[in-house]
Length: 411
Image (cartoon, rainbow, N blue to C red; front, side):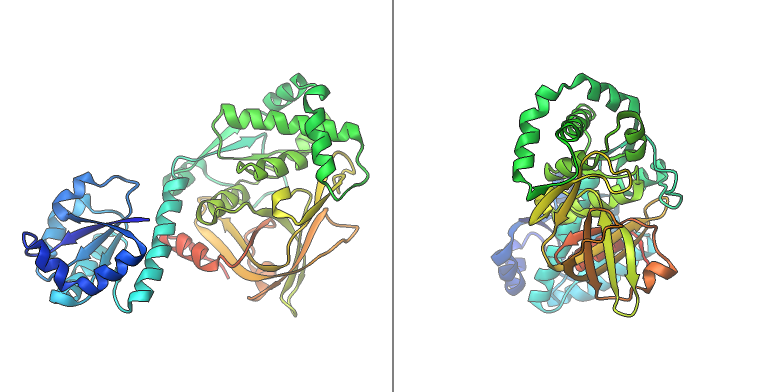
């Protein structure tokens, strides 16, 4: 990991003196990062994908900041160890930048805390850069019951740099019809062989579901999609098959795929992948216990790679096609959801996945999660029905990322 250390000092011609004055902090940084020490005069050499810290090395550099304001990275991270009046200067600079509407913060204090903070900030930076320019395909339309899950495409692009693109469901159906059973037979048999069991569904159902996967995969490649969300129930009406298996396999491949045309949830899944590298489980909130702070999340699709084992079932509501009953590993998890028409609100809570349940009147993959926060959120001010489950404790990463983008946390 490389850090570009943009140095502001009143005597840059004495580079050796500057280094010796701040040797303690620079030596510590060099244990963890590749340092590229540059002058503020080299700001033009910094690319938009280069992670930078503004190293305030001495006092008396406030005017330099004002002169180079337009070239500074946004947000700006100021590093000051206090030597050579550097912290005094950083405080004045920080206040001036805030007055100009630029987000910034000062890194100062215990060296290990500074190192930890740099890792978090670097992760945010990379995630933001990764999201910028990503494309989300909306195949069909959002389900009519998702009345609180709309997204304003233009505002989302302005905030996050992502692009939603509408894709006719007829195109998917056309590609589906072009794929023969023979083309997908081997892949269907291989997947069935990997399953712990196959229940309810027929071999014909399996072949049709695999054809939907191939058709969606083709669209993702042709349109250079990083993510997609599918009008599942409309598809069921026209083809007699659902997208549950297709979405599962796409998520396994790293193409983020969500159900029901839910615009907010697919963005949540895409954002979560950008800062954790993980695939996630999009689910209904099916049961809530506010006394124990437990919830049950359920849906008929989950990436098979997210599971310990999986069972091939039929789709719960329609009793048709292929669904995935995934058995997920127990342990630490994070529940997250981005909401609002311009995706400027979010919920996040850590918890423990304690059990894979098997209620007959719920979607096929079911997990019980004991939250570390109050479950009252779901009953008093939820960000819609669907929420996203990630393995591990990712609260700090998510909270830092969303706060850095000016989002409001809902609790």
